Image (cartoon, rainbow, N blue to C red; front, side):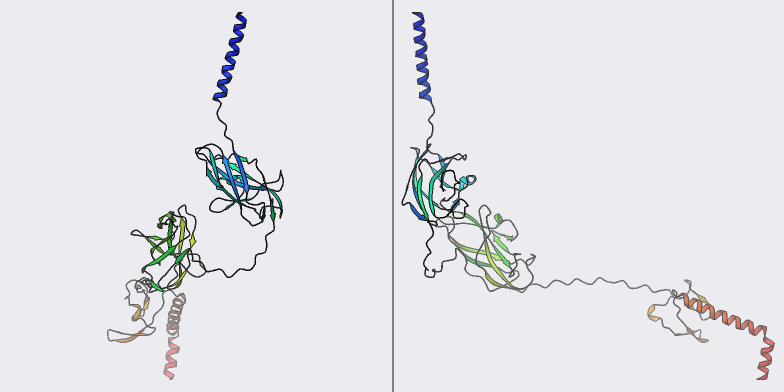
Length: 395
């Protein structure tokens, strides 16, 4: 009897534990898709609209991408519209696909737009293709839909010639600029921007350049400061677009003669650069021709003064016939020297003082030779004085 009670007790405990585990088992999220295409045949440039019913975890974000496949086992490919642009299919870029968020009932219903990616190697030309949806979680986990849509892709029909398109308004328009400015002149220009993201922040700056040159220069006024063209985008003039994604206003700019892009007075192009809040850009406006005049000429560099040369002491033959180069000789300025200067010595005689350059050895030897000849002649006359006297008597 005791054994029977024990078995019954164990059975009862097992049943209770099983029920507890079943009742407390966490709910597993399920993801299901219902795809209904508006048709099943499309040309290879057509946009395919899918109507999706999705269920998952409540109040949770997911990413959806349409994928094509030639047959089971082949690579997936395709283009998915994310609200701004078509994104080529690749798992690494899943956060660029269409972002959705489930409601309190864990559901989402909406449209998914897809296209064939004709540039992908998996596309094999017009034929039957399988179409599915791949769901990605925030962490990157993915799950393909069980529902598969078979679509027939045809070749693009050659479009018939269309009338000339109506000119569209430039979404980034520089309305007006002065024809001529001076180097230091500041001026205001009116700007019109449209087709931008609504309530978004952008940065603008003015830029001058010569035709064919990418060396831009100029300054843009931000508050009370002038910001150079080469300073960072986030220091430039900030704007915020309207709800319609447009902005109208004025920009005050000037040239920058100190920049290397400025090559002197002449003709330049002026345009405006636009950067997004994260630094993407620049996107350029249309350009206008501006002539820059009245630039100051470079200040001439004054010549370096030269020192007055010191008169050179020159050896002279003195009136007494002696030669000396000592400091006792009279120093005469260069301007007074001549090759044959007459000097009156105490009124007794007029002696020709001949300049002998001190740095010419030949002059020394000529002088010494002359003295030697004179001395030899005197010695010869002295030794032969009797013969000389007789000769003089004869005459």
